[in-house]
Length: 209
Image (cartoon, rainbow, N blue to C red; front, side, top):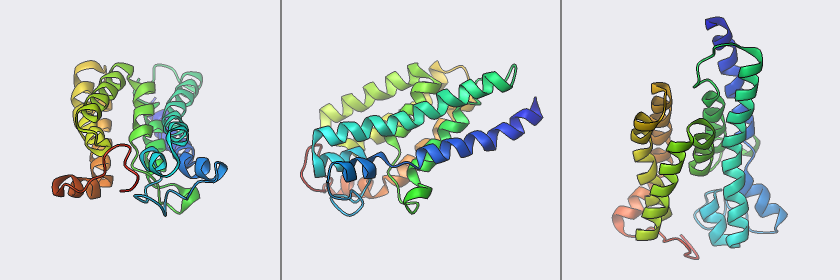
């Protein structure tokens, strides 16, 4: 079993990484003849910036595509794990979800310049621990509704996600994985954090950052 896990972990991570490296924001913007999200608005290839540059339809497509990367990586990994192993740990498919998350942040197909990972992390959560996903999404929606800051909503939701995982998930490993992802999300939002502190962060629906 330990040998199987040793072999499967890098394979699952690589599969997830390549899946996550497909940038929904860039592809959607190209297909809809919108500005490149890396050079317009906040410069971030994610749903919030696509909303600023191209409107709700493009943003929804981007959001769903980014979340789907994380979800599919976990689901397909789960099928592979169940097919080729027996009595494997329940957290093993989450390794592909981590790969998708890292791939979104640093996509090999787009010069390692990716988004901030929130939607992909949510997709990974949906496939790994749906009750944690549900609470994390509800937290995001509540904070976004109260304060109208996408970055603040994401930071608050993922600051609480590891705690939700300890409460609801059946694996301590998932909580550790979530904590690591949360640290990366905070790192990728460091510019937003500075703007939130200074009062210069754009609110949801603003035309520019």
